[in-house]
Image (cartoon, rainbow, N blue to C red):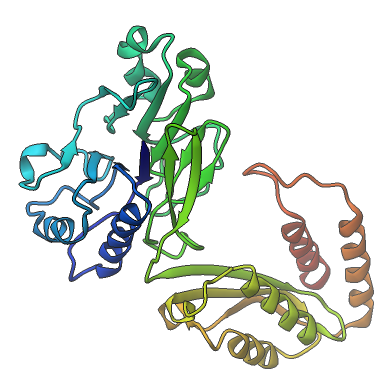
Length: 357
């Protein structure tokens, strides 16, 4: 059996956010192409509990492969979602926790979002039934041992899952919604949002498939009509600063790994910091030209607020020495509170050129 997993589509209306409907439609299309039997949406299919789901039902009837079953669990945004609000076939909504057989050898615990509960508390009533079984958890909330990045859309902690929960209840795999950034761990996976909601959700979008016979998880690129990137560059006070910046921008764009013909989908936010020998107007012109094939997010020009123009040769020499020292430093950048080498260099340049505060 092959299942597909996505989450955090955050549908509103077709008129307000057609790109989110297009991304979901592409998932359904690829489910048909890849012989998927079950699509699981792990919460926040809707941006909020709606009074009318006609737009979704129209898309569902139009694009769903006839043999594909869709299972939805409510997330924190649509936690009031109930089965009786829909009139289409092949759609299942589990608004309460439930265990279902996935195949002959595995079970799955569907765990919808519950206010003021941890996942460990929600799993506990089912621990005896799951003990000694091969089982998979599908839920919606925060994996506390994961790579959590600040999310302006959803600050705070929601229905957390801890490493202790995994050790106690021993699920084989965990698929979660809520974090919009795709994440792959040893046991815990976030498919991520299929279409970005804001500029903090950068990069190509994906959904996952899981082959229950082979035990294989695969990532599939979503044909999303909207893609965000947010890029920050630190300019160093060297004679060829323009050439260095041009080269770094080119490399950064190449690392986007855009499929052919997708340039018109990109909206990018750009920030330039550091210290330059060249004047700020030249830096701005180069940056706008380098990104001329893409749209700037909200038509914002590159932000140069953190860029200093200072040709002082003594400070230049100190800056080069600081950069050389940092390049040789054995530095582990992992962890949300540990600054990167780039952040350290930027802070050093700020001291060298602006003075310690």
